[in-house]
Image (tube, rainbow, N blue to C red):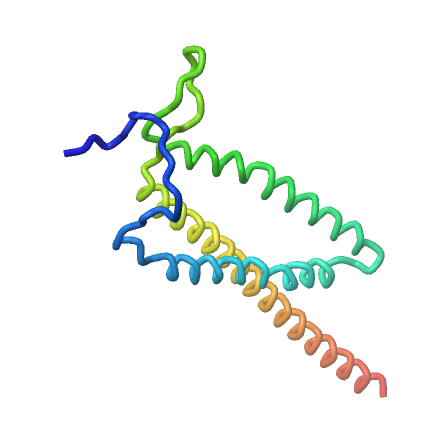
Amino acid sequence: MTPPLNFSGPEAVSGECDRGTGCTNSNIFLAIIAVFVFTSFMIAVPNKTVVLRSVPDNLRTYALGFQFIFQRSLGFLPGPIVGGWVVDTWCLVWGQSCSTRGSCQFYDVTRLSYNLAFLALAAQGIAAIFYFLSYWFCKRSRNITKETKSVEVKEVEKVEETVL
């Protein structure tokens, strides 16, 4: 039985690495990544449309600027930090440098791949839930507005009948 980690020394072989017969999931992985990328870019236009429709004309440029700042500061700044922390939880062997912990040398690749896929799926699912909730409440408030307008029209007609 061979040891799980081989520290015999550096060795390089010309050509592609032999992945063995167990690596058949690459097409499925690429399809899932394509769906994630497609859905991420698909929500960009409705996101901007909601902002432009819900803000007065003279404040639309400010609203788009604030949206840009919030998305970048809440999404892109903590994202790599949280992602690095999550990836580091599956480290098997840490390097040492001057008796302090260095960078990770070996990961549990199987757990890492499944958990990162689950994390991406969970994030996309949460985003989809919030978009459907915003659609639901936007649609509901639009129906309430239509009902109040029809009530106002009926009241105006009643007032006109009594005046005439």
